[in-house]
Image (tube, rainbow, N blue to C red; front, side, top):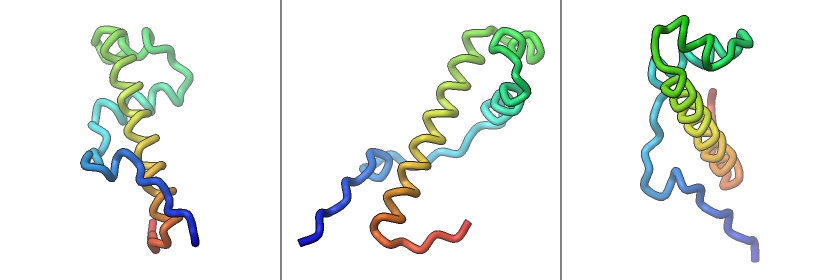
Length: 80
């Protein structure tokens, strides 16, 4: 008997959420090796907001990756 894959938390009721424009903007700037403080100065926002948005975006990406891995485990054909 094959073990049933564990259902990721994102498929237990949480709907997937796309990244906001601000989250995308922060990740692009972070990719350029800017600190959260430097990003905040560039965007004219508080550094705490940058840190929160960056962490939230990474959590969303992690959840989406878990969903994709689960789908592959159960045999869902995914076209990217």
